[in-house]
Length: 66
Image 1 (cartoon, rainbow, N blue to C red):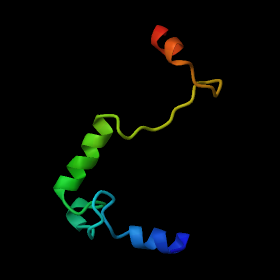
Image 2 (image 1 turned 45 degrees about the vertical axis):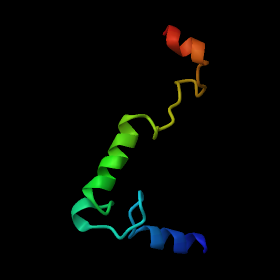
Image 3 (image 1 turned 180 degrees about the horizontal axis):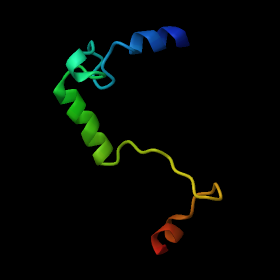
């Protein structure tokens, strides 16, 4: 499967379970899958990488001192 096929086939399936998307819960198939996704964000499973002003990440010990 090439990259274009992956993008078009994934556009109509739930990112959690792969079932067809329900318009009421888009981009998910159900409230259950939407809740699973929300829980993953709230519990820290998903994270958006962040940079410091200088573009480098502090060491673990330095971050807790600030």
